[in-house]
Amino acid sequence: CSGLTGCDRSEGAGVGHLAEGDAAVVGGDPLVPVGPQASLLQQGFHQEELELVRKDGSRFWGRLALQFIDRQDLRKGNVVTFEDISIQRAAFAEMSRARDLAEAAAQTKANFLANMSHEIRTPLNAIIGMTHLALRTEPTPRQRDHLLKIQRSSQHLLGLINDILDFSRIE
Image (cartoon, rainbow, N blue to C red; front, side):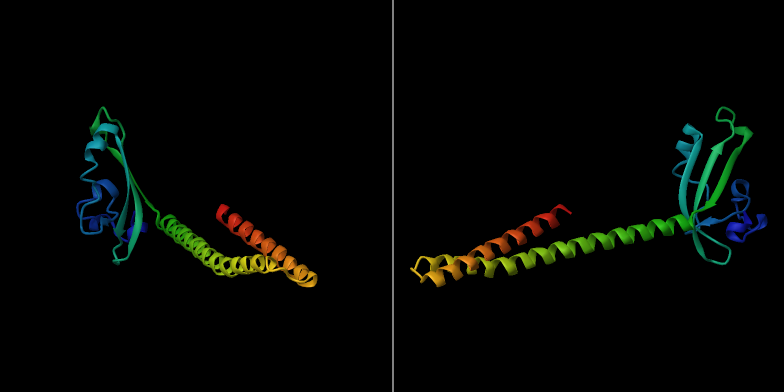
């Protein structure tokens, strides 16, 4: 027990009977869970994660597990285990940060694509519309050929942009 907290049995201050003098919960509450006592008595088992304090004042996360040896005869005692779960907690926190960053990046990408969609489609639609109007003015055969190429290319480009935006929404 002293490996987790640096305390020995004599420094346990009221928790030695449960944890061989292991640690105290942040805020000075004893390690015996007050709220879970009812479930401990009903189920014979209780487990929780607590932020604990070492003798040197440093904090760490620990998992406390209490189990009666015999629920029918509580005089037989109980088994209490402590496990330092600081590494697991840190890994979980890091995964949560990574997930948050990934979600933020995805949102930034979506916002960028939505903005670019508008910025590209608006002038492209103007080109398509103006080309359509120019084709209605009886252009020369050479002008008509140029306008049709502009119109087809613009419509093709608009189709590509729409496909890219549709694909990015699927992701």
